[in-house]
Amino acid sequence: MLYKFKSRAVADLIMLEPQGRQILEIIGKTPGATGIVTVAQIPEAIAALESAVAAEEARRAQQAADAAQEDADEVETEPVDAVHLRQRVVPFIDLLRRSAAEGYDVVWGV
Image (cartoon, rainbow, N blue to C red; front, side, top):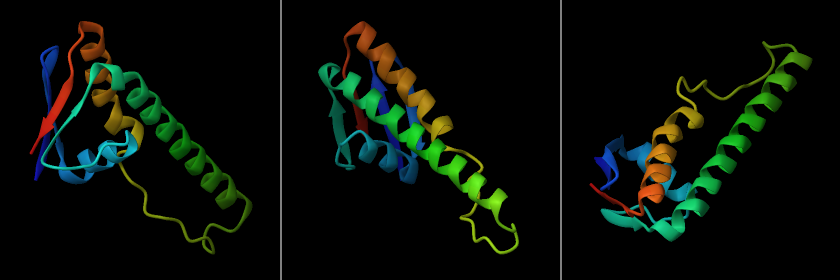
């Protein structure tokens, strides 16, 4: 399944279901077949995404520091995700900012 985010301000943004669901959950929206982020909700959504990115980066930095202190062979680490949250949300944040600047809501569908 794909999520297709649309706004009259920019081209459509298409995401795979797991990533689209994650972003919707971060901004406090219920992942579903359709939905909307109104212009009034966009600043809060951007702040939530930026906060989630900062939290993930802090967690990764702490894990790296912990691994450096202990023998790397003895430390269990979670699998390395080749694409981090920051990289996934940048296009969505851009879509939100440009939509807000032009006064358009963002809608999604599957």
